Length: 112
Image (cartoon, rainbow, N blue to C red; front, side, top):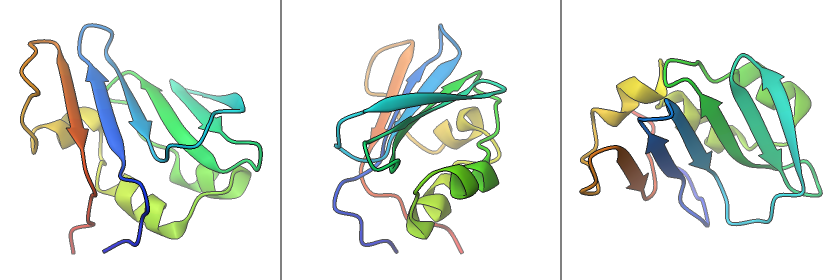
């Protein structure tokens, strides 16, 4: 289990085939395109604030997040629970009521 102060929030737009993983409530200072449908938002200290995923089958580049940005190992563990894809992760959660938009909010715990 993680000791996060703010929960992750995953927002899915099925029509756009995109997702956004908000990892903290900090302000975004910069966005970095990693290619392959991944955009990483960071704060002024290069701490990952959120990840935009263009293409619900796109895989999260864990090693690049660790190598290029500040991201806590607990956060990487949580992101790994979303693999192999955001689309596959969503089947575990219910819709918020809208037909094309799903949102999951709350603390995530890695499965063992």
